Length: 282
Image 1 (cartoon, rainbow, N blue to C red):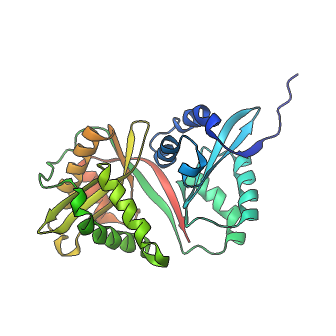
Image 2: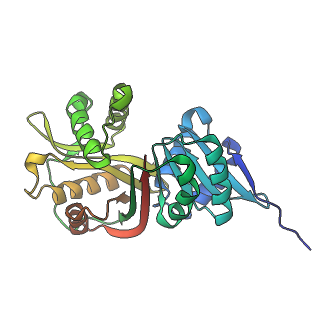
Image 3: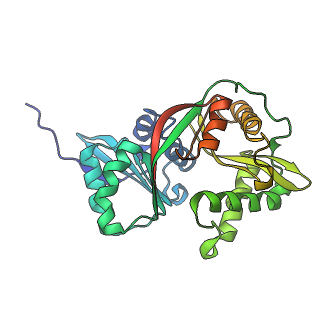
């Protein structure tokens, strides 16, 4: 008779790359962010931007936890969540948010709440949307890749969007140089799209993660004085067309359930709901 072995929690390394990618491939849309980090770093710690923990049973990795600026559970079993939470309580909170599939975060967060302190906000239901075909509305021909000499125009728009969405400035705590470098890198790698008129960003969006045939859009924003003019849907249609042609055939994003205006825009473009995420903000 074969006896199951106890689970093992360990920090993963480059030798674990193949089984990690196989686990992430179970849901390429939901796991796009972690997949992007894994593919970029090949699990080399200095490039990963954090740690990737694995939970193994009978020698096979069955669950993952990415610990960086965000804490992201991946395919976690109840046993793995308890083990991850035990270690996370011991080391204390290092992240600014928890983001993941709602069922997993809903079970993980109560295990951490007492020791990590109160959350600033819990966004319990964020539809994860996807589109893998041409948009059903015409695209804005003026939305294009941002040029490297336009970074200074893009950064204020990104700051405005982030502050509006998250409730704090990404420049807080002296993070301005690092934030600008991140935006410049998105521009340099062809992942920033915008409509720019007279040196001012009117509409913009970036692709923040790419992995296993999926790219994830972030930072969708229309300048306040241009809202209500119908720019959102054609702008997003242009982003979808450009991203599917140049980056990955499947485009995803997630949105707050209470943001009805944005949800109408995405539905009009042709996005459909694939899953639901939860974000806990600190």
